[in-house]
Image (cartoon, rainbow, N blue to C red):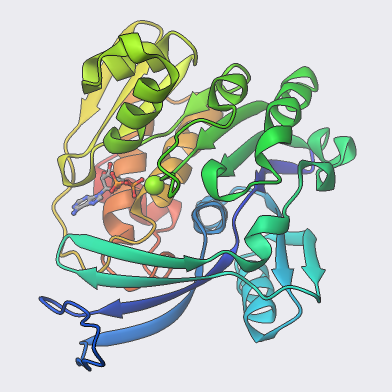
Length: 314
Ligand SMILES: Nc1ncnc2c1ncn2[C@@H]1O[C@H](COP(=O)(O)OP(=O)(O)O)[C@@H](O)[C@H]1O
Ligand SMILES: [Mg+2]
């Protein structure tokens, strides 16, 4: 197998402005922030960087514009050792950008979709699906052309012997629909946070109530492994009728951007290497926690040795 992971999804720049207690003000109000950085962004891309940092062989499929941001993103992926031959450069559309307004323990985001809207399931060849052990996709709801084709991409990947995972992230439209049950039918590992899972289960099945236990039961009936992210409360995983929990590791948080994506990569590292559920969950929580100790999504992502030592995994 050429790759451990093929990651299909969002690749954009993040402009992170960090300022405790700073709230933007229209009416031409200008305020000073504590720090600013331009970073590789996109849930899927941040995930790919953490997976590569852990030593997995990763290929990325996405779209960027023919502009300074697009070149920066391709260079950053390559610097992490990620294969970029499936990243398409489209000259007619600008690279997507998200502005993150970060304050202690919270974030608000503004996104210009740009090339994110162009990623199409047809870009993912059966050849590359046959070359990977695992396929991951992130940000289901902000990729309108990928979404309808993703169920068949996952189905083909499974038929070719790969496992699949999905982190939908937030739905800015508030609809939480668009074929999620179809893609979950071909998903081996589902990685929502509490808010996302509650919205998804409620939208898909009005009878599921709306509380997190009902939502988790709804997901576990569809996907063999559900890893539920609980922010500063840590995470839980449900698989084979068993539920395992992990408290968050205490850290000095600088920026929580991408914590969920780094968690996903750590958990899936354990999953792909047949680790016991609890060890995989702890590696995920360690990657999530450590990733928050630096600005942006990828600067503080740990290596395998760093994450294992931090989580006390022998
Ligand atoms: N403030 C924090 N302190 C320690 N760990 C954290 C913190 N925020 C996130 N994490 C770790 O990162 C994981 C993923 O973060 P979370 O915010 O739940 O994901 P998402 O970004 O998808 O909402 C959590 O399960 C936790 O282990
Ligand atoms: Mg997330």
